[in-house]
Amino acid sequence: MAPTMQRALCRAATTTANANSSSLMPPRRTPPPKGYPPSPPSTSTSRPPLSQAVEDQRRSPLSYKGHLPVPRQIFKQRKGELPKTSAEWLQKSAPPPTSEKALAPTSSEGEAWKRRMAAGRRRNMEEGLAALWTRTQRTTAGRKERARRHDLENRAAMNAPPHESDRLTAPTVPASVLATQVPQDPDRLDHALEAQARTRAVVEAKSQSRRDALQQLYMAARDFIVTEADLEKAVEEQFRPDYFADKTSVGMPSASVWDIDGAPLTVTQMMGEAMGTSNRVVRSDNANRTLQRHRKIAEELTGGPMSDAGTD
Image (cartoon, rainbow, N blue to C red; front, side, top):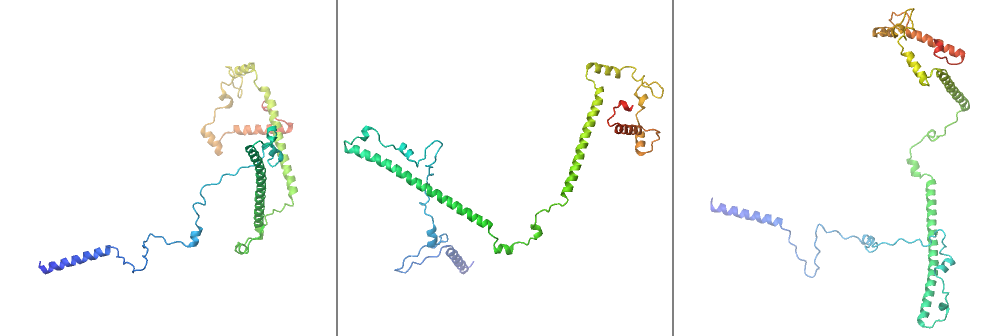
């Protein structure tokens, strides 16, 4: 490379480095003219000064330091105690001297000073209690007055008519919606009599059902087993070997329950009876239905339930 080209490249590199270093360095501050005060440093983090109004509203850190003690209830009177505002309580709390030595003339200046101090303490106690009682009454009266005034303001605001802006911006409500009174039924007395008759009929039906149940229980009680002898007799009767021999069916001796009531129905026979295609002449359910009808008619005619023995 020629020497001229090398010198040109070195000059360009030096110029670029100087430009970069000058851009990274902060600008040089020019000193103020002679006789002028120096200007404060300008930084981006400094906060502008507040106005005097904002400074005046700032709370002093000494204004809320510490706390006040809770005031005692001096004049709280317990059961059986004398009120502190009475002269009798003050007489008992700070009684005057009654001994002969205390009533005798003083013999020295020190004793006279002690008597003056004791009298001052009694006087200060009496005056302090009177001042505290006056302040308590004034505070209580002020509190009650504020509560009364606050209550009156609340009642006035509650009973005040709506504001004009509220009236103009409120949605329209029909008068029929606001009328929530339910009119009375003109036939309410007739409806009440009908309901009373229905209730009386239901009560009478329940009473009749209870009487019928009691009558059935009375008639069935004669077959109840209540002793061991009756239980043994019933077991021997049901499980004796010739139990089915006495129960004949169509003039033929019976050997089992199938000879009396017949063989149980098959599935085909039950399906035929359900579908109405059975070829049986007499159905057992029809016979039972006829028997129940006859029994119900007999009960209606006699006015009482019939036992199972009377239907055989």
